[in-house]
Amino acid sequence: MFRSLFLLFALMVGFNSTQVLAVDTPPDVLARTTTNEVLTILKQDKELQSGNLGKVYQLVEAKILPNFDFNRMTQLVIGKHWPRATAQQKQALVTQFRNLLVRTYASSLTAFTNQTVDFKPLVMKPDDTDVTVRSEIRQPGGQPIPIDYNMYKSTFGWKIYDVTIDSVSLVTNYRSSFSSAIRQNGIDGLIKTLSDQSNRTSGSPAPRSGS
Image (cartoon, rainbow, N blue to C red; front, side, top):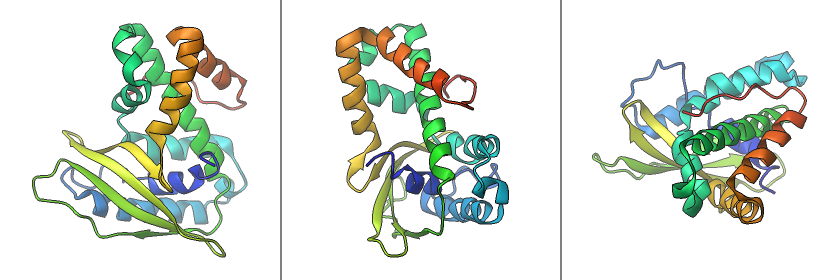
């Protein structure tokens, strides 16, 4: 289920409008404005619609990933195992988790059709630095699917550190599977598994450092 819903997730996390918007732009305004930009690109670009993976990866890199704090996300996903990982292992985990999401988002975006997005009013106090942006994905003939974004305000603007799709948290979902892998084969075993998956995926982007 989680993988099938990543299309909806990917449509919503294009929060980066090439850094035109100010870093203090409210998170809901940032989300609404740039989501419309991503939807427009998907609807107009024939190469994206035809499944051009190279161009899909470019879109993912430019419009989606800059809005995540991968260090924080990976730390939350690894959970109790994070403190005992070495610095080298931590960097490898961040890189491999990032690459995992690149592959997932790219695959999902090629399946885009004609979904629409409805943002809910943001509940936020003036001094809040951690908020939840709530939305719904509406698709013809189907029930709306709620998607919530947990975001915090960094010195570089608002960053995503978790997403909940139809009551399923991305962090919690991966924490369960990663913890099981670590118990069986250790941290290095998880890193190798993720690396092997990346190497087996045709057209996978080259590993990059997490940010």
